[in-house]
Amino acid sequence: MADADGIGVDEGTRTMLLLMPRLVGRAKRTPPPEPLRSFDLAPRHLSVLAYLLFDGPLTVNTLAARLEVAPTTVSLMVGDLSRKGVLERREDDADRRRTIVHIADAHRPAVEEWLSASARAWREVLAPLTPGQRRLVVDTLRAYEEALTDADD
Image 1 (cartoon, rainbow, N blue to C red):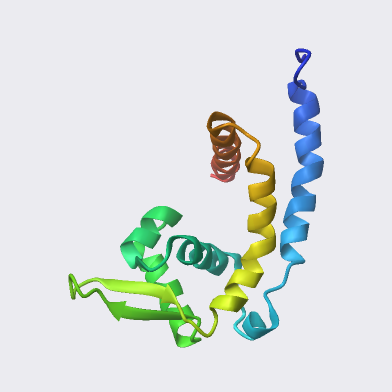
Image 2 (tube, one colour):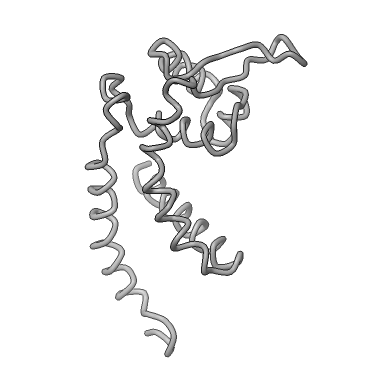
């Protein structure tokens, strides 16, 4: 049952069950731009590229923390993308033990193109919301992912 401003749990569940496959299908149908197609990029690569595009150069450990995966996992992805020339690694001038990762200048425009439509759409739908409403959307999607993970275990 729902109040005057909302929808019931069953209606919300039904709507999301229909909506989520369309969203996933649309994401899968959005191929990388031509300059990136030969690199065989996967969704996990997209997450790394999104952080580096929006947040600038980061260390492997920072990327791992943000992606919520082990540093070795990120290190493997960074190594793969570095060999392909999509990413570049350099020593941190402040601490030579740390490696800073960034998108190679030659591929930055293609990465921006690949992420721009999705980023524009999220900005368009999140901008009119209050900070609390945006937090609710993000937290709900995160909780949904966790519930699916728990169901898999």
